[in-house]
Length: 465
Image 1: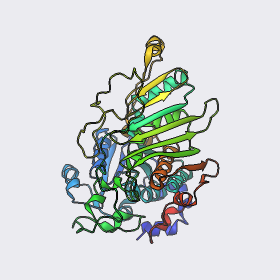
Image 2: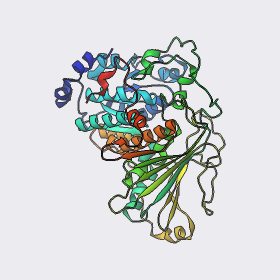
Image 3: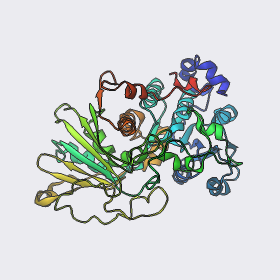
Image 4: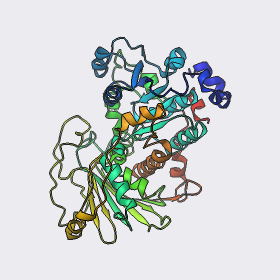
């Protein structure tokens, strides 16, 4: 089933339809109104997104969609909003309610971001999609192309710190020349991950288990070929597997590397070097990874390296004057919902010619290490306060009042950095990347995997723009 009239008759009517989006939906929302929001994925992170959007006061919740509607993780939000229409298949939701929907929030596993986003944009809906934008390089490329094709539609990726203090501080410090001549950055996430401690010698996926009665296991797969059901594929566990998610890099990179990537105009790397892959296997992510991304010189900025570290004891080199490394209570807990011990907060170290900047994750602000940092305190530029959090920013953009801070044109290349890094992790090898042709030049298999496996039968239409 593709539907929404066979995905607007196999996409042939998309261009004509989007010229006049009010044919398909309410179209551009009037300023001062509220946004009619459909919520796809309502448990776990999806639930958090829904409540955050609703609390802004700018959203009407008009539809809920979840492949496990009625599963334990969905019950809380259903009790809070019992009258919102419910669906298990996003295509049926659009068939039934497209004319009543202005925007969608997508809080589903990484592998399902793409088809939902593509259909929503084609139907004239604004899109807020969780990070990373998609699982494969090519899917992100197509999502960016769709956003360019429909410029009146608002897009936002869910790296929520991109609307908080770190965003405005980094921008102000870069414009003032405080952050300059950056040649290297380390980015690290050293908390335990869901797959830590698993058997790294596995030769096949886990044995099949009974599918929960509430779960539509077929729709859960979306464009990906079907697997036998196992509890370690759902409710956040999907993040462990190369087939479904982007591991620690895709999960946390968007909260750690985002401002440097945007304001230092990094774009796409030319090399991805796999320096460490502890416990490498073909199914789930390593127990510890070190990845080196090389970016070329840009305008008046020198070439720059980013080294990514994950794994509990796989720490970056720490300067002597690093200072306090106590865990920051403002940084969200580990992916299993518990605050677990780690030797270092998730964060980053940014190296300029004469200054070293220490930063955390999400909206955490930078500090300048050493005596030079103390000397600069009185001359640092004033940092503006955020006029809206990430959720209000999206909805106000739908209302024509603001522009989103993490639209696909900004979030897309960042997400592609992660997909390239995951390819290096999966193959445990060095990759050379041509930024102009957007091809991997030293590994034919890796180059083929930029697109991933062919889409599952019946899901091909989403790959047309």
